[in-house]
Image (tube, rainbow, N blue to C red; front, top):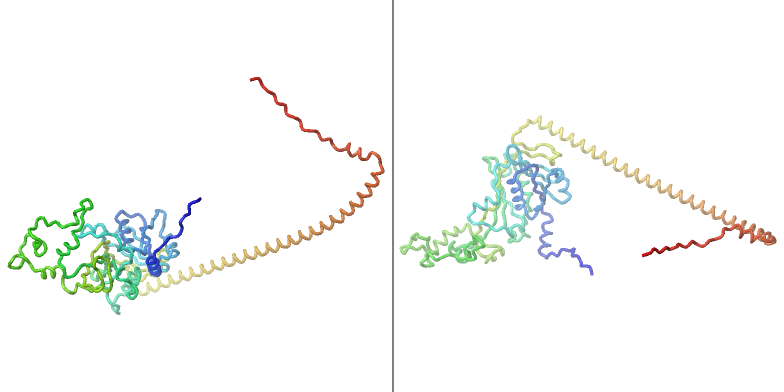
Length: 443
């Protein structure tokens, strides 16, 4: 019996709900364009990590793939944004394209740091696990408020970054899904945009760091040593030396120890850092209503972007230039450029309409030709049927006539003697087939 192949994928109700919840979320392609080095290739992978789960994490680029191929395929797959990284003579460049009609924002990457660089410099390493199953929260900081004095490209820049991530819905979102934050900070002095990526951590409030280390255990630095998760108190004479004072230093009190209240306040910070959880959060003892301290741990990547140009349309079908960092045009030049773009768009529209008319005309001609061929085949079939009916009638009349003639000839031939013998003599005699003779040789 053949083995049955399993074709269906069984999803839990939570997975199905999460998938339907992300149906309206923006999807993105993050690619490298042209010849780039290993650092920019790793930056592409890190950006895909940031944009998970609403991006193609395992998208593989080929050398023969052009940017036009991605622009053609992306709208068919429901992709709304395309981020393309390339290397120029000056610095790496990032293009953010809103599909399918634009606009296109071009950035120069002034400086960047990879995820591995951030994790090496951090005091405590973070595990890359469940944080990337949900989309991050986007925070826009230091952008000027809308006003007549605000440059017109700043609101468009804000909306472009905001549209990269799913919109927030406080009434339906769960607190446990808020695991990461993407910070987009505008620097008005330099005119650059800082890109940061953080992981949200929740710590107990009102407990000193040393007590928390006793409760949670020491961080494991290596999996080879199984005892690395336990604290080493062998050099301490008393547990109070570890909990209530710094090692080798005398405390502020008369007995050389600091109080538990001062230690807790110095570790936990002020009351402004503590929040009451509105719902259950991930982690141990993070229940609803408890007072916790929220911390942000940077995991990278980190980028400093400078906006160079904003243009209408997509690459290959560029429209008017809305903003340029270095090229400034007068009102007359801007009007002439806008008129040329309008003329090009009108010509493109006319060619598209003409092409559609040609397609419709060819379809109509094809349908008319097929209809004419069908009518011709029907006429040929009717003529063939008429010829066949006439031939049948002619064949019936000839058979009757032949029968009458054959009957008279039989009477005449029956009177003549030896007629049967003459007919039998004219017929050839049938001879039996010759037999093959087998010759046996001597052994």
